[in-house]
Length: 106
Image (cartoon, rainbow, N blue to C red; front, side, top):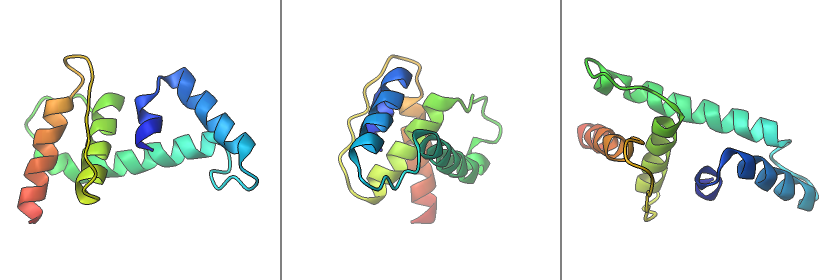
């Protein structure tokens, strides 16, 4: 999933088609199903963090949702995460929000 999110939108679709074509019994069902499931899970993660976002002017766009998802999954599983991207793509913001949420639950 982390590799998938690092791809451009065109490459994501190609990657999923390649995986489904090569697997005898593709558990993904179809690339569209995988995309829907991943988007649903990311939106649930962001929804759970909404109380921390109140009063802050934050755009909940795709980059923000993906970063939140990656930070939570990799933190919980203790997987190192190198998040590289253009300035203004919510990397530091996502890290701060996830860190704050984890400290409150800890």
